[in-house]
Amino acid sequence: MSKLDKLKQHLHSGKVYRRSDLQKWSDSVDLHLEQLQEEGLLQEFAEGLYYQPKKTAFGYAPPKDEELVRAFLDGDDFLITSYNAYNSLGVGTTQLYNETLVYNRKRNEKVKLNGRIFDFRVKSYVPESASSEFLMVDLVDNIERLAENVDLVLNQIRKAVSSLESSTLLANVDHSESDRTKEFFAEILEDDTLVCAA
Image (cartoon, rainbow, N blue to C red):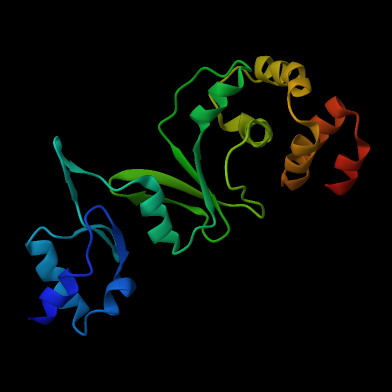
């Protein structure tokens, strides 16, 4: 069995690989990567990042965002979200955005992965999932970047805060890196400790 065939045994349909992952199974990784791409077994979607296409009834499926980001960051400490998630809060946001946000602790840049732009933003706190409380705080953090009626949305947030779990909301406000956001919620919640912590 050739070394290339041995490497092929480690490849799985739909999986994303870093060049460094494949080095474990190949002593000529660059040559083998070139051959695998020529055969259509791997596709490069960013420098040093590859995936094996997964065939479906409708053709080849692109890799999942989580797989792309996990390989790019070489870790699991991230949250993928979008400004569109704010629309689920019922606070007057209505626009649709074609931007994927990735909160993480490593990279702060916009990167094109597999033909799409991912906006990587470094945050000191990255939750496992985007709760309503997290999204509400994140919305106030990002309000100036959105094509929304800012005054209307902020007024709706003031009304909606009472329906959220207060300790979870306070924890998310505390993790915010924006003094403006902390002051906004301190005023609503009448909690001076939020401003002092800023």
